[in-house]
Amino acid sequence: METLHNPAPSLGEYVAHSWNELFDSCTRCGKCVEVCPVVPFAAQIAAAPPAAVVAGVLDFMRDSGQPMRAESAAWTVQCNGCDKCIPACPENINPRRMLMLANAEVSAKTQPTPHMFQKMARAIRILVSMQVIPEDAARLLRLKKARDVDVVFFTGCNPVRTPQLLFNAMTVLDALGVNYEVMGGPASCCGVIHSKWEGDLQRGGKVSEQTLHRFGTFKPKKVLNWCPSCNIHLTETIKDYRSVEFDFDHITKFLIEREDQLRQLFTTPVNERVIVHTHHGMHQVGQDVLRLLRAIPGLTIVEELEEPGYMCGVSSAERAPALKAHVRAQTIERCRQGGVDALVSLYHACHRQLAADGKAHGFRVVNFTDLLVRALGLEPCADTLEPFRGRTDYREIVREATPLLEANGIDMNPDELAKVLPEIFAMAEWKGGLCSFAPQE
Image (cartoon, rainbow, N blue to C red):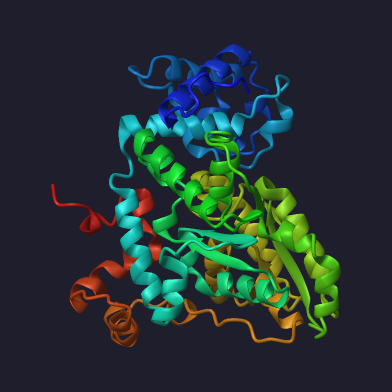
């Protein structure tokens, strides 16, 4: 990308420059639409010429004073980040990045998720506080004093809703003897919520810059990422927005680089037959997970089931609901056929959804981190969401969770909490809900 004259442009300036490059480079050929797996499941998009769909996005970004064409808006909103469009582009444009940038402008004009970050931050704190003791909650949510480390483990915001996966990953880092610190939760947001979902580039840029700066204060060689939304935002959508002195890798890549050491540490056989759930939009992460699992003695990988998008959940696969439902039905049916001991989940959102599907349809779901910990001869962290999964007596849930909530400093009327819990569990803020957590205006 051409170097900007301003050594520290605002995110708005960075995005404007990016769009100028896209206007100059994109020929509107429509190849990205032709290969998009969402299109066959979205009649409005399928009925339009692919070139017109792309042109509608570019025309809107040139003049967002007019509404985007309906088919172009549908394509933009339903982009699940599967990345099949990237190799299809003859001009070497990244259409996934183009649509991520376009969604920020759509959000700025339509405000479909007002006050989302504030709602999300409060919901996360409550949900974490229902599951773990204060010491563990602080490790996931609290800002840490800077110290020199080799690695920062960056959890992101929403992954802390499933704390056991992150603590499992930390167990593996501990076994490898890694000198690391944990950063995550809403206090260390990547900025994607403010930019893409709220359409506030000014605030989003400041949040991203602040988090990148905090990484740097630890002087790490690497920042290890867990959340794919954070990964795409920081290394693709706003790549080179700010220069950094560390490498930004997914934690699975870091573990693959230490595969020989892990093989020596994997002393406990895990005698199970499993299906592994992966995502096309993060293909390499899925392949790295498969490779790590193949290093576990006794474990047999029967099959890989790759779903579209870059993960399950409202930020990716659920943006294209018809496609998501079609593929998920196939995944469930395969797991119901039996012949395996478990379905292995990939990311946090994947685990939440698949664990619920497994409970409803009679198959077992484990995360890949559980298997890594078991291979070390250790006990994986308990799934602390499981006691709440599928239940509807929210007053009883609040009564059970009250000791941990109080220990973690959550002082909320039990009746009010019981009333809002369904929205917290459903992550309703992603669809404009959880209005009781928004500022009173």
